[in-house]
Image 1: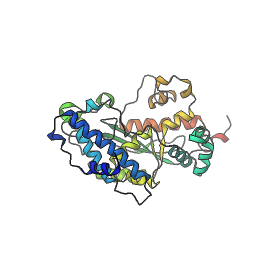
Image 2: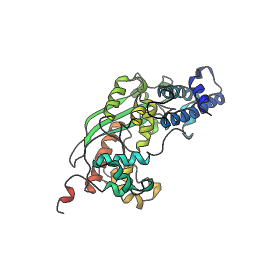
Image 3: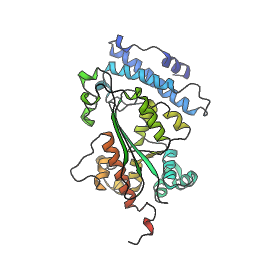
Image 4: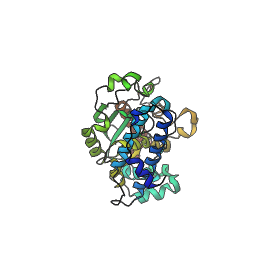
Length: 328
């Protein structure tokens, strides 16, 4: 598919409710997702201010693709690989996060991190961390941001100090199409969100007040998430203005999972199949979860757990100002 064809797909009228042929619906979905990947790549590669189309075109096509996926059935797509979801943040994003945490020039961190940021763990411990961050977590109906919906989100701010607690906490549920009143909320086996939680709620894509509040927050303080590439990709395809702000360098993203992997030596020692860098396992090691407790998989609960666990890791590594000067 070339750019002209992708633009044609984006401009085509989609009527998934009039078709029952799953093969035809899947063909439309595949064309949509191929077009989305190409459009995003083209838009990001274009010089700032000279993009060949508005990113709103991408958001609109993503909305149309969700309707097609609803017609196919969420369960049928649950294990279909996503061509859209990013698996990790870029090396530049990871280095920029360390630079912000330590209030150091980005070029210094990049130099210390080395090729492909292989030595970023060294940069993480080179200087103290400080500042206020915004923890963010979402629960969704799909692994893919152009096939499903955001049904729950949690946000909290926290100052990076040894004794700080999360503050200004906010949590909300968001609506999804009425068809799920009968079939149930997809992925409820993970997040335990039911129709009673989301029925009658305004969908995330239509909640302008939430859009404005989130964008204002993320352009003021860094966004922290565990496996931040997930939240980053979902926000790209669901939050108006987010992609533009990212491209303009107004948003700093900190991946707490990367902090865990770089700073906690247990991650390299434990079996990979045990998911040692998962939030739950990390929290158990840092005692922000007690033995037998589990991650709740709800936005605000996970945000608070993540922030406390990241704080505990920084304390253990003596990365808060003045800690290295104290006598043992």
